[in-house]
Length: 496
Image (tube, rainbow, N blue to C red):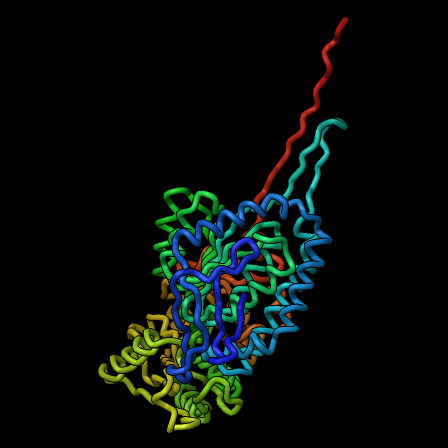
């Protein structure tokens, strides 16, 4: 469903409904945040009618797909993963140019998306096993089964679009659901390609795609044939969806934002800690839900830690995301660019010690994209706006604390609870501190998932950071519901 125009080099993307590409009556352009004059793709802009047609197609396909055997589903999941690997070059090119994350990060994202389908294939037979418990007699038993919902609407964001799509699509279809996918208008190209690759390995209508804006999302949530909606994105949008879903008690799954704290303890390896915190904070220009977004460091080591952090961030190079020399690319879109820049200006106006660091890869093209150099706020206070809000950009505030107790209290003093980190050379001390932090995930001496963590950790948040879990063998639970059968023995009546 994604074609490349030989004349312009831009991708041409339509909707995918019941296995057929639909051009749509309206289109919108997707631009390269590294070079905003470059049109990376032209995409069909969907309507409520398009969303309705996609839901109808999914509902038509859902019943037969739900009865497909587990071995056949496993085989198809592996074929989808192989197709992603086979189209990795095009996926990386499109995602890099529409998203703005550096190309090395996108390569890992595309590889992880293929692995997501393989992971689900590995645990699917176990996830769908039914359980039978015998009763008092041979004719009495209880049987507990897992069944799909039917039609699931998946609404995905722009910041890591390929992987976050795979993390919804793979378990949803593996569970036996049919899906209507709505990509973000800021990064729909690679997502549409990935969905098209998946759809090609499945019966028509199992995977459908409608591009567009809020009109499409509203139509999906309003549809009486949609049985669940899974959304990744911001809290404000999630609240709109939840209010709308309340009218029909539509189940929701939300993976939302975070304001992830890093708690540095006195015995941490400061150089290694500064290096790894910088990597977590400024990966994808800070546009990661579980990026480190605020640092709490004890006064006794604050000066040395800040010196090392400045040294590390000063070495970053910002430029075109497709240039292998860049260590950070642009912010994805103009709205986010303005929001982050304004936040930085308000922080500077408040008298804080704001250090804009790093270097420009090519200053002559700097104004062509949404580029921002990484910034540290070295004397931030816990109640500052830049600390309390999720910046979702290349800004990292450092707050000096009196002791570990205050650091953990500050870390928990937030409406968010997605991820967090503790930094210490003592595993026992780090684990004790981690146990007191209110978050869905706590890293120790890292701000990123390990290989084992990627496979095993259910991603999700406490408080206003989400409802439900994604990834790992637990992620498929969001796309299954229980069906229980209670069999009672009946004694035949005598006919004498």
